[in-house]
Length: 90
Image (cartoon, rainbow, N blue to C red):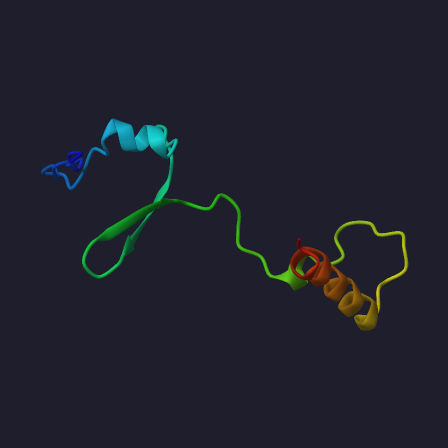
């Protein structure tokens, strides 16, 4: 059985993340981490480097030269994709 990496809390409230874990997650000096309380411990994850956006914030931001699809066109394309991927298997 592999040993669980451990660390200690310093008098300044700092911890050292064991090197194998920093390497595994590609966390280098300066990586910003979010600290999330999950009830029985803390979760560390890299901070998202760009703001979360909604579809309305980005819809239409790329040029599009062909005519817009209708709801019926989209439904037909989805149905064809489902059929191709799931129903036509050998």
